[in-house]
Image (cartoon, rainbow, N blue to C red; front, side, top):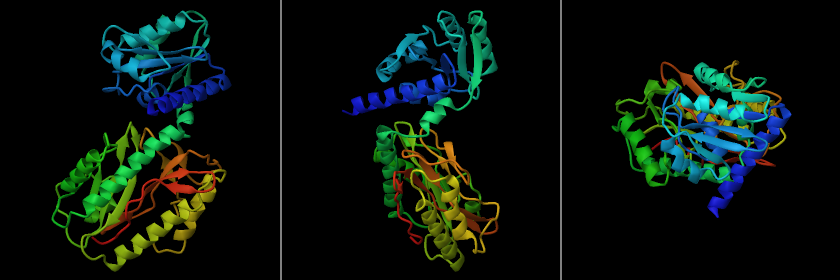
Amino acid sequence: MADSRRAASLERRLGGLRALLKQENLDALVVNHSLNRRYLSGIPARDPQPGETPGWLIISQEVAIALITSSNYGEAVSQAPHFDVRSLQAPIYPIVGENAGRLIAGENWHRIGFEGDAMTYNWYRDIKGAMAAGQELISTRGLVEQVRGVKDEYELAVMRKAAQISSAAFNEVMASVGPGITELELAWAIERTAREMGAEGMAFDTIVAAGAGAAIPHHETSDRKIERNEPVLIDMGASVEGYAADMTRTFCFGRADARLREIHQLMEATLAATVDRIEAGVTGEYVCAGWVETLRNSPYHDPKSKGGGHGIGLAVHETPNLGPTHMRLFPGMVFAIEPAVYLSDWGGVRLEDTVLVRAKDGQRLTNATFQLEF
């Protein structure tokens, strides 16, 4: 049953992209972005580094072809039910572009799109050099990402699992740790527990930031020991089938001082006010007004902060972003919403949940405790 739901989801994704190709008057699209390749085909292999790839996809209204290096061919055949998987016969990355160009040359296509944000110049040159006269390569931006922006039920089931593991791992670890543990030890305890609960790994390196480090949004977790009564920020998210969760909690071991308590309550209220405005059909501007109004009369109000969050799915940060714009929300969009206050001489408080847009409300997929004192 799970395999049939996955296959149906992959088929829907191809249909969504083909509708956009028709809208953009493109005969085909070359897909070489690693996450877009996985999204459309189900092939999980990632690009080892810039300029290296396990393969590309070429998609038109009639065909869906995966050009895959021989070392990844077997996995691709098993994972990509809707693709004609063709082996490149050698794990030599430069031949991908030439092979793609030759394939395109044999088709009656005139306008062929490629992913401008992912294609290297050398690959572009390899494709162009092998194409037929009269065929045009056209740079595109964000076509597959548009389809990725709204998740279907299969994707949401996977994301719920990632969020549930994230929440449960945080709750379990926090019940057994205390002052004196290092940031790195706490981060490893979270990752180990998440893996034991079924995560394939973490969607990003877990951030554990204690004391003044909590004022740095992307603090580098260190061997610093966590002391009693100081703010501690944990930003974490499990990964399941490549899909990410994203969640942040701030707390202390011991007793929270008045400042930490005040800011924590304010951030919890800001997060709630933002989530409470989420439902299908509203604009980003409407949602973000909940954030701004909660903070407006606070001593921690930053006039430059307009509220919002980032899309999340196969990437931790992906489109659409949630900001004070006229963009309307659709059911199946998923955002990570993360109000924060950072004070460089003291620390910071950030609270974040992964939230699903539904017809009548926003549903928090992460639900770990907001307990302030441990």
